Amino acid sequence: MRKYRRLMLIGLGLGLFVVIVLMLLSDVEQLLHYALGFPWWVMIPALALRAVNWALRFVKWHFYLRLVGVRDLSAPDSAAVFLTGFPLAISPGKAAEILKSFILFTMTGAPVMATLPVVAAERFSDGLAVLLLIALAIVNLAAHEYWPIVLICLGLLGGGIVLLQIRPLCLAALRGLSRLPLVGRFTHSFELFYESSYRIVLLPNLIVASGLGFVANFLDGVGVYLILVGLGLPATAETFYQALLVISLSVVAGSLSGMPGAIGAADLTITGTLQKLVGLSVPQAGFATLLTRFVQLWFGVLVGGLVAFVFRRKLFPESLESVMQAHEAAQQTPVRERAVSLGD
Image 1 (cartoon, rainbow, N blue to C red):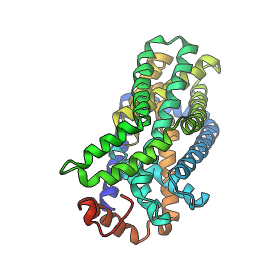
Image 2 (image 1 turned 180 degrees about the vertical axis):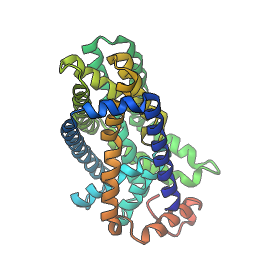
Image 3 (image 1 turned 30 degrees about the vertical axis):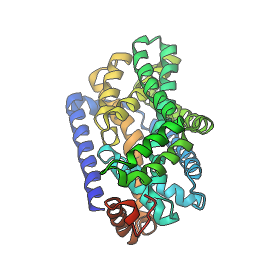
């Protein structure tokens, strides 16, 4: 557990560093000028839209859990685990998010490797949804220079979907792995991971999840649009599609970077795109980026941290540490010698 706390502290430190750099590059005096003239009531609907985004993503999360066999988890408990994932996501490579699978194991007994794909699948379906939103914005803005991003990412995601759907090939690959001296001990874990992944990416399930992600990320675009209008941009369709493209590109950049909470990558993408596409000055773009990232990231970290604290006894029982240690020990032991099964 200490390891994961350190990872989250690294993310927090990096986030603070990026905020300070952004403020310095944008000119603190100019940022104060824009802050004094900004209609702060705009943040209320922007944060409310973000909360609706969470509600839609929670529906997707709970839907995924049922797909992988977790059916005895109540909606309130599921929501607590889901919200706790927000601060976990600021760890490098989102490594601490694996804790959600261990928490689910202590609550329901669901195999860790069976629920782990749910964490990745959330990002996967959001990626498809965001690419569709980018395409929508490109068409309406005639910003054709962004098409390569859409096509390359769609090709990679589509290739992954097709590969997972070719069941005989994947099972044959798993059988091949079982014969390798070092990797073979993890074959059962890989099988559980693949079975869950296969169910998640079946076309009907993928359509439902991507549809929820499309609406959720669309609302994020509305939130950024409200911030831009608050900065003085005209309340036009062009401004809206610019906001939609800005936030969607930041999601793609953050995902590809692997940075904790997309810190740095998303911030730079938002700032740069606002300058190039929207025509904002450096201080304006910096101020808009700080507001957008608070709504998109730090608001969730605050809420998730509060939920984790309030429900800490249920989410992080004393047994969680021993469960994680036993799971790690089991992974180091050949399958036939394992005395304890933790769903690996």
